[in-house]
Image 1 (cartoon, rainbow, N blue to C red):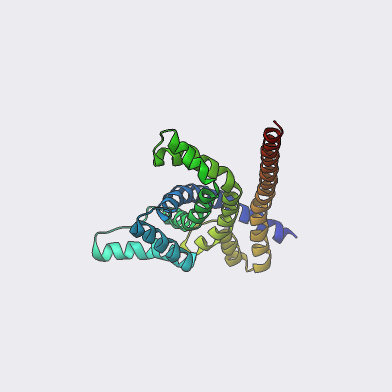
Image 2 (image 1 turned 120 degrees about the horizontal axis):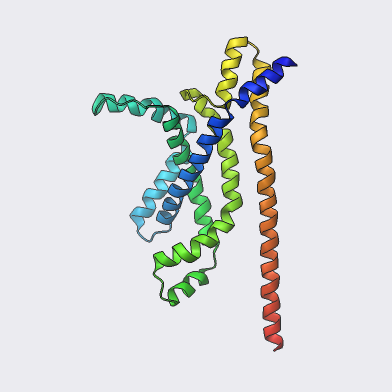
Amino acid sequence: MDAYIKGFLVACQGIPATVFVSILSVIMGSVVGLLIALMRTSRNKFVSWISKLYVDIVRGTPMIVQALIFAYGVPQFMQSHVFYFKWANLIIPAIIVCGLNSAAYMSEVIRSGIQAVDKGQMEAARSLGMSKAMAMRLVIIPQAVKIILPAVGNEFVTLIKETSVLSYVGVVEILRKGTLLNAATYQAFPAYIGVALAYLVLTLPLSKLISALEERGKGSKKELEEENNKSVLEGGAA
């Protein structure tokens, strides 16, 4: 039993690195994802094509391959063709990889959220004298954020689990801690059970919170629809 407790406690030592990378990656993914989503909805075919190509490449290649390219491939290429380059800390390419990977998925989530907003909102904003960019920033995007909030939460949970691939590029996160413990004690089962429990400590509460937010969002949407129907009925009666 002591071996399992030790495995869990050692794995938990990697939680700060996992959470740090996940939070920064989701922020980066949201910002870059918004840009890509706007490019996808652009009337410029070339801009739209570039954004689609980016999403296809990122979603079509394993994250571990992307991590290896950034962590080891980029420095080697730079040293061979440009100038001497070395990452100050391997957590930097880890954040970049996770952020750019998340952006590809977030762009689709954000794009669907923008498309879910009633088109009349844009027309109403334009009729008030707003430019398209201003209407998007002040009217459409704030409403889209409310729609996609649960999906963003799910992406965060997914990213926490996907950061496990970063152990292969030297980032000492949860899985890496378990691997090092296994190498030191030759007790694979307790070490990796501890890793699994550490991930569950992070993901289960977050999943419950996201489910609660989704239920709350459904309730708010239902109340809004009931109010709108009531207003229509009262208007008809008048």
